[in-house]
Amino acid sequence: MAEYIEFQKYLKYEKRFSSHTITAYLADLEQCNQYIHQQFETTVNDAEFTEIRSWLAHLMAQKISSKSVNRKISSLKTYYRFLESKGILTVNPMEKVTAPRVPKRLAVFVSDKSMESLFHDIKFTEDFSGIRDRLVMEMFYGTGMRLSELTELKTTDFDIKAKQIKVKGKGNKERIIPVIDALLITYKRYCKVKESSFGQLNNEFIFLTNKGKKVYRKFVYRLVNFYLSSNTTVSKRSPHILRHSFATHMLNNGADINAIKELLGHSSLSATEVYTHNTVDKIKSVYKQAHPKA
Image (cartoon, helix red, strand yellow):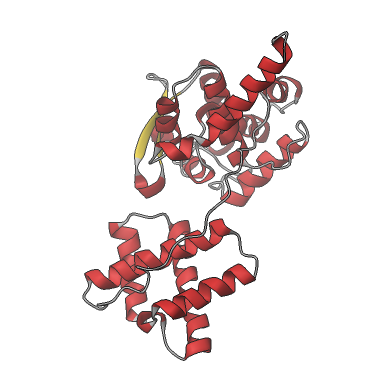
């Protein structure tokens, strides 16, 4: 449909969503359209509330998580608002739709002792791949940035003099994250071995594969999973766990939650507050161990 193409442009140029988010939104839209066409012989553009509700009930019956269903609801709401703005739609079928509750889950994180052990006990090699791998791990844990943000980092984003790095987050919003000295030292070592390995031609993006190409999501994910698997017992071993660890350890060591919100690039404080639950659990544990009446 022509509306799909216009909607895609709207998400990219007006909403400034990432390519990953745009792909997900369009997939949700197509999935809904296929169901409605099969069940009611109409299209998503002409769907009514009862037909949308039928699709959502179908998803819940398939044991799709509440979080995933809510994402699909968000996709549809955005699409129907877009149609309204273009005068294509007069009655929005999403107005009566309520999102299912998402159960709160504690953020999984690696203990500070395990993180310290990772950087002290694991023998990263001194060649290009070894120093790069160490820098990837230090960058995630030292800045709390997202996987998508790390893969897009450019050498011009790293300000060595000011000891800070510029990160482009969701919606292309830029934020500045300070860099600790240990990370700065590793970065300087990496730059030297990177230049000796690939020269100035491959100097636009910070992180490269062993073949000198820009790293991609799966490459970095596997790298992080490998090192966390060799050093920790956490159930999840992804770059996002290092982001959780960064935020939790900062909060446990007295950092202001609003400052953490800015460092993580969260749009609202509610997204950051998930880390306070881990802090409360730590306080309770210390209390039980230390209080004579506990």
